[in-house]
Image (cartoon, rainbow, N blue to C red; front, side, top):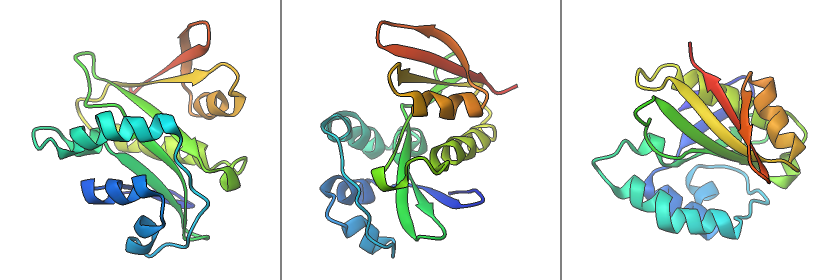
Amino acid sequence: MIETERLIIRPLTYEQLMKYAKCDNSLETELNLNETSRTISEELYEALQQTILPNVADKSKNYLFSTIWTAISKNDNKMVGDICIYGEPNEAGEIEIGYGTYDEFRDRGFMTEIVEGMIDWAKTRTKVKSIIASTNKANTASFKVLEKNNFVKIGETETLFNWKLDMN
């Protein structure tokens, strides 16, 4: 678990991910949280089914590098957004993150704080040397989160900016 000024960021277990995917407030009930307007995109649902759940179920892997970490507002006692690491560090010590803020909590600085918390956590992992991320070029808010956390743009495709933060 990660704690920041306004948030508690907790990794979800396999069983909690199953409840998360249902989007029926059963996860919020289990965690004693107030209900939220959380929805899951088709893309995230597909990632849950094809990648996240199988990786979290794989006992040979450290699930912390595959699960969804949900961020809970201490003031509201609600889930405000999520961050996920796309697998254990590669040979170069890189991990990749993806994240999203729920609509009702946007533009309040939560995701900047969530990413900062994840950076602090990653710094405690000896195998992690850097964090990478990709953002849609049209999603200004998403890449501002990375800029505020000192990520550097390292490249781009037609639709994406690629970012990196070295841990040293």
